[in-house]
Amino acid sequence: MTPAIFSKDRLNFLFASSKGQNFIALLFILFFLIINVLSMQEKSWTYDEPNHLQYGINILYGDSNRFDDSKMPVSAWNALPARIASYLPEGIIKIYLKKMVTARLMTTLFSMFVAWMVFHWSRKLYGFVPALVSLGLYVFDPNIIAHSQLVTTDIYVTGMIFFSCYWLWKFARTRKWQDGLWFSIMLGLAQLAKYTAISLYILFAIVLVLHDRISRRKNWDNRSKREIQKEAGKFFVYVIVVAVVSIFIINIGFLFNRTFTWLGEYKFRSELFQSIQSKINFIVPTPYPFVEGLDWITFKERTGAGFGRIYLLGEVYDGGISGYYIIASLLKVPIATQIILWIALVAYFAKQHKSFWEDEWFLLWLVLFYTIYFNFLYNAQIGIRYYLVVFPLLYVFAGRLFKEWQKISRTQKGLSFALALYLVVSVLSYYPNYLAYFNEIVWDRKMAYKYLADSNLAWGQDYYALKVYRAEHRDVGKAPEIPYPLPRTRTYFAPVNQLVGVSYDPATYQWLRENFEPVGMIAPSYLLFEITPGQMQALCDTTDYCK
Image: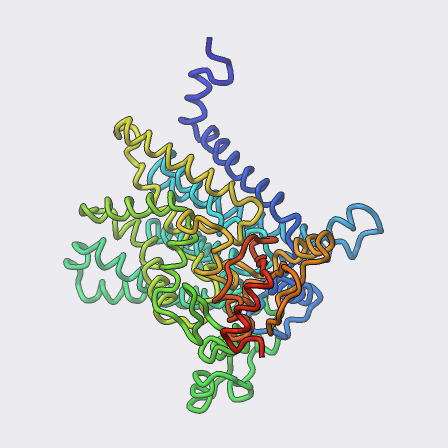
């Protein structure tokens, strides 16, 4: 006899009704919350988190002046619990609100809303089962999990770009002023998350113009010159509204700090902004720290100042590497997810689809642009986190593969469930080290450093683990920069980024990197090397490292 909870009527309600579908989606999102909360507990501050949180605190205390290039007002959301705590009497609530884990939880809560919107948009486009697939790909993305538990801006800009795309798609369909206003608000808020979002103004203009020109070709062909001019006038109004709303939101976010400063009064670092400043002078309608930060990150990205060397497949580089994020994605995105994405892309473009300019165009244009930009034009390639902006868009699109779920064969359904199981097992096997996730291409996890480093693997998150390990293993010391003969076998630890030459001179640990293999790891950020007296003596006799 079938238990009541699994009765046919109950299952029909869950899958057929909107409330039932929402309930299932919320279960996925609840799991996402739990896995984030549990895995963030023992992780120390990453290198960037304290400054992001400090800038958020400064914003809440009325100070938006810059002490760094990339810190943005959105971090005030992470600082909000501590600010609330400052008004409370001493007690357990105040203690909890001031904890690091609470600040991180604010990013998780935002990411949960992104997850819900992935489900919502995919369901509107393709139906419930595709939406569940899209949601599952987001929830079980280890890179999304990792950065959803950090006080940084990567998930915020990922989410705000996604929200902006959704509202643009909706406005393009309805042309209702309410949808246009929501789009303008989302686009303005995106500017408070990360400077990546500035590119959206041109990208979205292209999206809307081509959508209207191609999807409504017959209407355009039959229009008079006056009607076309009227349509162009509407676009001009759109531009003005978006600009006004965006400038207003940016001013609110940066607290109207020195708004309307003349461009000639700015102290720019980058050649690009200095060149503009030398040619024209005008009153800038946005706050000083907004433009200052944009100039600063442009300077750093062009010169390499501030982010060290780029590392890929065992080699260090002083500038960007063509195809970096393509290779990083092949290694760090779960294999099951990649299979689904590639099948979805091939299956879609193998046929002509009338819906492309109405729907998929809004998803794939930004994916195409950011793939080209980050892989071939961007220099600060220090982690897959910059490329996360395309992930939610791809996951919504991937849901389309399952649009005809009821019609596909049992074999195809079986393979789909097998891929889902593989995805879950692969992701859960890395608990709680999601920042250092690599798929099964890198089977030996202690060898991940030979492929990628920096924030792909070691971003300061394992300091607590190192501290605990060293307290229990006092005979294990840090590997010396200059090797020397050993009286007995020694075990050393080496920080990954120093070992490969990202944060140190690559020559410093060349002796260790090229002559020994790690025998274990304290955590993904710290590798263990065991060296015998004979091995060290042979190294000293045959090389100049010991001199």
